[in-house]
Structures are given as structure tokens and as C-alpha cells.
Image (tube, rainbow, N blue to C red; front, side, top):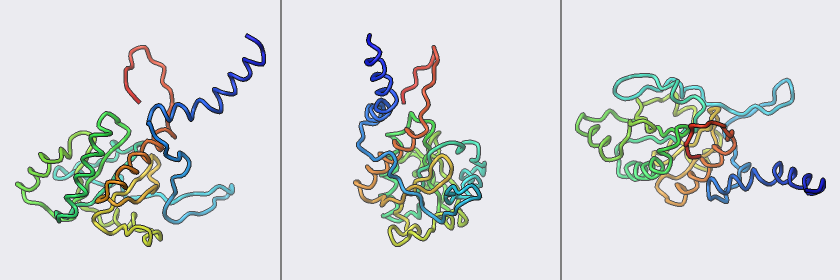
Length: 215
């Protein structure tokens, strides 16, 4: 093997292979670096941009047990919706179900549905059975006006973050990365691509003889 060939192979592994790996893993044409940041931003003392970070996610509590979800959310991509038991919010739940089925084997992706109203026991039971919420990677949480405030940013003219049909994407560092219309299948499809991009950004090959986890 010639020296020039070896150099070319090294350049390929450094510059091209990561992009090819992403395509193989996700089957996606999503722009990896194109996900925006939402909310106010500032420049720190080092001249680096510091993006807005949600501050109340770690205070969420599982409904109805009241257990905090702080440890479960660390380092994960969060897909969040609110439900007020209107026909529109049930439509969003159907889209959340599609996302849950897509990422049910990805422990670094967590779905969170936040109750806007307190349901009856029968309604809560039906909700869990129909959509398989509060089971592992899909958390049913208590209402949080503080978190709703976190999600209201100056970009509301793009998507109204107070509307019940919005699905919000929060990255591994609790930064707002997307607002999507949960009623529209096209937007839900884009959520899948955005989640794949965020997962790829944090992808780290793990060498293990016993691991058989799929990325």
C-alpha cells in the first residue's frame, strides 16, 4: 500500500466517513448542523455564544406517583407535548405514539406528555392503555406552568408554543431545538429526522465484546 493511498484513506476516515455513518444509521438527508437554537442567547466572557437552557425540566414529576424525573432525563433528547384531552391533543398523542414506536429501543430519547388537566382514574387508565405512556421511555408528567414559561420564547411567531398541538424538541443540554406541529404528519416526520441528528451529534463508538445494542 503506497504512502499516498494511506494518506487518502486517512483523510477519508476523518472527513467523509462520519457523514456516511450518519446516513447509514439514520437513512436521513437531514441537515446535521442546521437545527436552530431557540430562546435568548448571550456571549460569555470568552466570546462564546451561550444559548438559552430550559430550567424546569428537572423539576417535572411523574403522574400520579410524584416521583422526580431528574435522573432519567440527564443526557437525553426530550420530545415534549401537552395534553388537555381535546380532540386536537389526542391527534398529537397519535403522533407521539408514532415517535415512541420509532425510538422505543433508544434509551437516550425520552418522550414527555404533560397533563394540562387532572384526568379521572378511568381516563388516565384509558390514556395509558391506548398510547402506552408512562412505560419506560414515555413519561406522563404533572402539569408545569413553569416549564410552559420556559418553552415560550420570542420565536412564538413561528410556532405558538402555548398551543396544545405543539411538540417541542429539547436537546441533551436542555436547550430548545425545535417547535413542530403535532397534528401534521410532515412535521412529525421532521421530528424524527431532528432527533436522529441530535443523537448523531453525541454519537461515540463504544468498544465492547458483549454489546449488541443498535444505534
